[in-house]
Length: 218
Image (cartoon, rainbow, N blue to C red; front, side, top):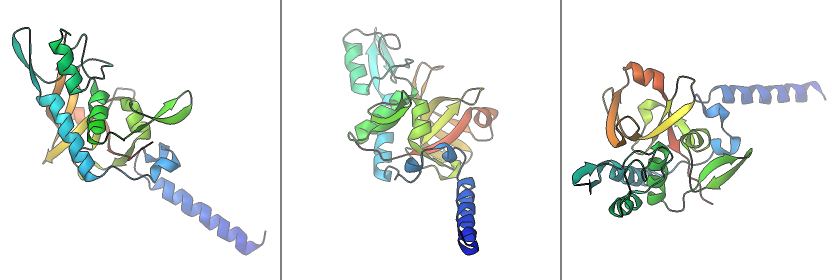
């Protein structure tokens, strides 16, 4: 190899390293094919947010009491309509039926775009599926975005003390330092609308990243 070609290849390699280093935090871990994928449209994101709001705003009667919000259930995958039918048929909210954090996001986006599919990892291989965990959403299905650039329908990921993804919420809006979102809350026992202050210690220790959903279709 002559000197000029060697210099050219060295320059190309250096530019590649610079491009990788410039990626946002978390993006360097993603598959190269996903890194260039398009994100969902603003219209789809807003439609999904409206669907997520149904989880928090729905009212129903249970054992003579008026309840609000789909009950939290770890591993629960109910849609709002499935939830209401099941409760009417005698299911106990939070025990027999409910939704967890990733279920709210997955079902909201599927309602907004029934053809949407999520990339998941199974037995060491990735594939498209109609469901995903919070960790799958973070690892395979979003483009990381700065908190200042979040749009309605973007996702907010939470982490545990070990830095592992422990939950996900859907961003509504930001008023100054207050970030409003919809989340299935284990502590509250239901899907709620709430907010966190970005100057709060909880935000700084428990919020991992914000992401914009990639547009995947089978």
